[in-house]
Length: 171
Image (cartoon, rainbow, N blue to C red; front, side):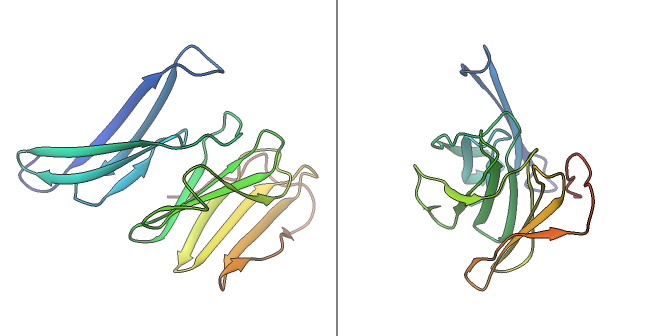
């Protein structure tokens, strides 16, 4: 690690997968104790157990599969030690999973939040206890679903007419 700061860890994992001969998953996480990241295909969480100038201790956890298509899940955080993951299921519905000191709803399950999307949804958080999910519906309209005040709110169409082919999340 560089002497000026903690540095970054880049993960590149390979292994067999049903859809292809080789699965490649990448991600990056800051090399500080307690930091974590989920790989691009959403199937492995990497946690930094300890970090010093002598080295870094990593812990990897394989996450239970959700029937998501080939598109990578989207991830947002509303604070430290909180990750929310949303992905499009094989039949177009959105699924949600969260990390808040443990996996929610559980390590093995994902929460079905519904909808019918033609492409992968995007997720963003602008404050504690707030998530906003956007996606293009099967009707080609842009849809929004929010988590606020402790629960999911009904989806709402955004604007009118046809939406762009896929929402893009700005960094």
